[in-house]
Image (cartoon, helix red, strand yellow):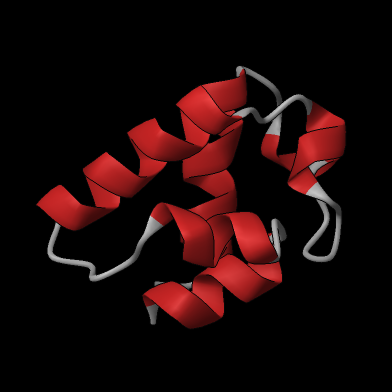
Length: 70
């Protein structure tokens, strides 16, 4: 998954413009919480990704998540 795809999905969940999220921003600073992270995990798993909540929580950035989901 590309950084743009990850950023797009996060922006949808947070209901903010994609342009507000930089690759290395801490997503928690944008209001991402554990419930929303779990919804992202479930959506990405349904799409075939093998990612766990703890993996995403460890480094909550678009860049890190894109690497995990690639």
